[in-house]
Length: 115
Image (cartoon, rainbow, N blue to C red; front, top):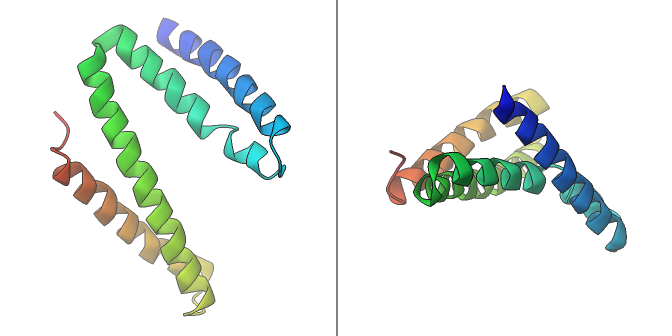
């Protein structure tokens, strides 16, 4: 229970900091980019370092990087399927989800996997 409270508080502080950073930057579309994902990742990594040490946090960081790369590829694939192939959103999403899974797990295996 304490971990969730700490994660909530640290996440809230970091989300607020990133929101202020996004408010300062131009164009304003960057504000959403800095809103949630970086702050949640930093809070999670801080807790991982505190509870499990730097080795565990390094593995979590590798997983986050693999997920981010896979998400970027997913985004490109879904856009291409929607615009070029003129597929429906549900079909494009499901096909792209398969690409996301292949890329994410492929990167994790390539990087040495999780223990």
